[in-house]
Length: 444
Image 1 (tube, rainbow, N blue to C red):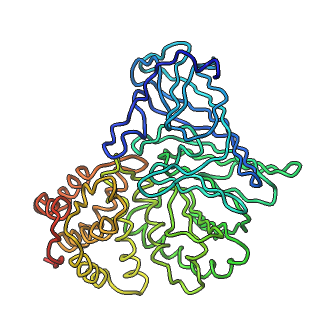
Image 2: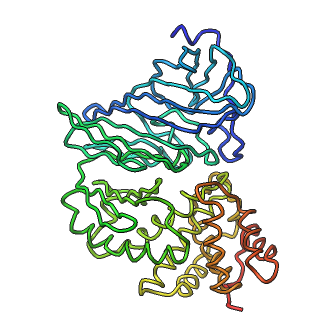
């Protein structure tokens, strides 16, 4: 037993998220993560140093972090060795000197091992070893698979992520590339993210990628396998038009750039991260077959990434909005109008069980397709109820008021009421808090 592990009785504080109470911790807030990682693809071994800057929200004799089954070698608090206990997904820490409410404090954790995805209701999520690299898809609980953190969506932090790995490989992480230095057989990449980011949206992607960029006011970047470069150029070729359309509908793009990573593996669905989206090789075919996914993931940069749900029960604010963006892009990009998509999905949902509340689906059904599609229908019905001018003014106001913050369904309803000529509480109760599917939306 490590000598710093003896006589420790610090309980693992829990977050206030009723869906995932064992993920996230109370009593403090992390303001910044500085992650220094070394990854060996041949063995899948990750060695890390995580330096956290945090603020105590109350007097603390100890605190806990979320961390998966990696070996912890050392924990320092304010530069002094701290006692710790690591197990069951929690790293419980007792500093040498108790922490006072309102005081900033620094934590350093040294750790290593072969990271594995965090087991969840939705399979293993987080760090995944690939034959020629690694990928991270952390939503909703996978961040502790690769770094110690306070894993709750309502606590956002800034980041610096440094990764050293084999020179033939490319590293993409959230934020802007601040350093790339090549040494003897290894290259170090450092990304800095000054925009507050939820832990589940932090990412590292490692692989044999060609880096490409479409310059513009918002640079559009891509990291793609060389063999897929031509297909990717076509399938993502309308992103500039998509971005312009979404900025008109949703307000200014919330980050400095946008990067698409195409991994040379098959993925069930693409996944979003802060300023980054990850697609599988099966999502590119040179025919734009999956362009709806391109729209969906880009829209998440506003809905989910910049405006993040304060707890997981509000996930429709991510997925309903991104799903509706698919229909909006179809309409703007010369495809079917949103009315046609809404009618088709209403018919499909009417044939399915009427036993889910979009506004509170329950933890096991967070990612039920009905949350996505009935969430989109809710927004289409709202648009048809209040009219285009009020609806899109509401969306632009929503992304501005909560830019780089967190939000709840109640806050969206209150803002919607301010943009409507009459109260909408009954409307939202019917669409979000009632199992039975309402009639199809009809324009007033």
